[in-house]
Image (cartoon, rainbow over all chains, first blue to last red; front, side, top):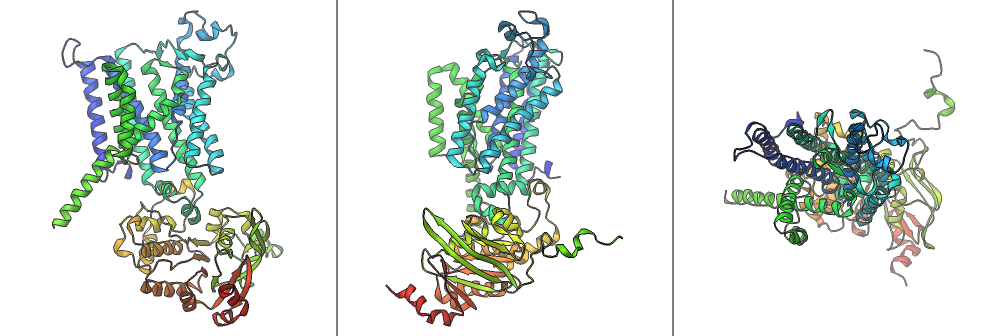
Length: 369
Length: 269
């Protein structure tokens, strides 16, 4: 099966191997090694790593549309945040009457706003399956509507990027409003449990971490299967020579739309896994800045490799965690610096640079005979 | 079975069955009274042109005569202001989009060779191959042995077998031109529109291209737009001269070249 054919994907094999190893080590070090030992991994670190995995899945989603289809979306944070809100709504409903106001039906912020009943769009979110469905359907649906309009009108390049940026900005402003019914400025927080398990428990944290690792691996395998199919080759063909693809007989808009929707769904799943780990979702997640930072992860890691995006996401976020702790003022300079370095010296990202090295070595070996 | 399943009903005989082009009148491409204007400038001015099934037609004309606009109209890139464009008797091209026209059997080669640079030569041909080109079937498409043979055959025809697995972006200019022609062949079109196929080619390459195009005529209808007169002379049976968006002269090469109006357009004032 092509799904599991890892022979021709060295980078992917290394990535999946490392992911498995890290996941196993994390579980053992957190659950089996006693807290006093120096080898013990704190739950804080587990959650931090889980966050990185969600970012990595988000980066894969962007790489699908940007690296493979040439659509630079600067609004992918919107799909991530919508997925996050879907999960957040489920978690809010799970609080039940344990909120500050003790209302069995309404979340605290609604009681505070003197609402007397649940808005229609909050119905159903007490069921986990329904919430998970929405986590995929809402970002997917938005991507479908936006993409259908934009691709049909043949909006491309920087204009499309600006429109995606506007999309996430508009959503941010909308979600800031209390009247929207998503908790306004404060967003959704104060979560208690998920599927009946306390979110504060170490074991729950580890399970969510494991779920993130599985989602990342699954997202990677699915994306790789797609980009290696004939449809994937058409998508790259659209990126490289859109007119040619059209005159060869492909309905270019449909291919763009399909990859855009798939990408949005993956971003939504990443967002849904992110929220229980950080414990809050608020309109700040829609900030255009987040989406731009995401583009930097992918650019630095290497576009069009999938695992390159993963690497970029993990590297940049590790640097961010470290620097915002050690030298808070330096972080934005470092981020800007990374962007300059990636643009000037690593146009194909870190992975592309390595690939270039190994190709050159092979060529030299051939030349030597 | 009962008489009269809808498909064989006599009264509907003028509608070609889907996927087939009705050429019973011997003409495969009709352009009638086509006008296209850009900001008042008439790129095509009441142009009427008929291409016979299986013919090889050369279109010549000075810069700005409307040659490329004509191709844009046929392939759906530009919509005519007035006039009609039909493929066979029944297929109205002015209501179809580019990909539909391509799948209906019109292939186009651009002036500047346009191929998929990061795909290999093999993949370029594979993508062009006639098949179900919708998203879902493409996701599950697998090459059959027959299809592989077809790709190998076209690859041999265009002389690129040796570079089968090279990225197409690394090919020379002439090879790219050939690859694009090969991609057209994979589409199995009924009409091939070929815009300046020998631009930037050496003399040997030009000769091979001439042989290839004349070989294609018959099974396909081939329309060649070209500036290189020597090349046109070597392949042309019938030549159409465009000038200011309409047909100035039509006929075999000698007739056209001795036509005083053509001489005036090319050499005069």
